[in-house]
Image (cartoon, rainbow, N blue to C red; front, side, top):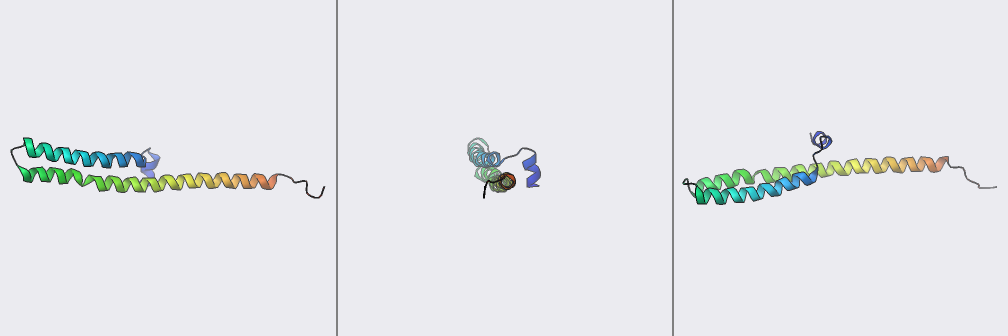
Length: 97
């Protein structure tokens, strides 16, 4: 699932941003619900908790996407290194001339 999201263009920075936005939105919704809704403190707490629980999911997905990005970078670097090694082996030397 993570590799599919990565291929679709979703990046770890986006998920970290969504996690931080979720924390801010949770605080804002709690404040607005507490002050402007007649249901009171209990309902405000429910709104804050509901939105605040998204943040760990977003951060977890951000970490998983970061691992996927690092794996992709490592594979590219490894293939470049292997090509350089093969090219170096093909270059004739003048040893013994």
